[in-house]
Length: 112
Length: 111
Image 1 (cartoon, helix red, strand yellow):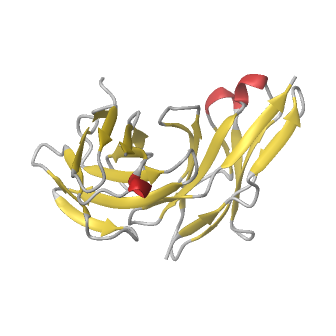
Image 2 (image 1 turned 135 degrees about the vertical axis):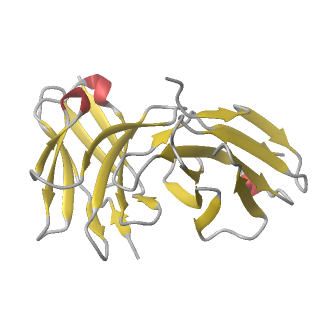
């Protein structure tokens, strides 16, 4: 069974540009979570999608947005990139509330 | 709002000694608690979880965790540490909404 896959693995953008990160959950999982991890530090919660709806978002500006598609895959969009957006962006998926979430390997976004 | 705290940024232990990585939580309802490990430049790997039942939960790689409701804690433990256990460990909590993580504890096991 395939795990959570994220693409691309690395992304280099210029300040002011837009970045699109993609995540494919494990088959059967309906929830997708996005986290930002800067400099190998803690995980900051970005967004939670379930059954195609945004269920909750973390304390990030509106230029961080996303969506979940009918097949439960998800996109994270970051507009007007800033240098401090450089980080590892992790996606996770889960099936039910009481089950663990499984993580992808992440997308390393570098803003120059 | 749900939250989780890992009071120690760094834990150092000698190989063969027992290790403990601390975690406390705050939720409004019944907690679902998890431990994850992260190796350099990798995503997080699931170690173990507490949903209900026995307070002592056993997980992967010889790790276990003890749920203590009165102290709102969920400490990760291992009887005998290995050098290969050196990594970043995250505690997480869910209470029906999203999953929130602690800041992480860097475990270093020295030979």
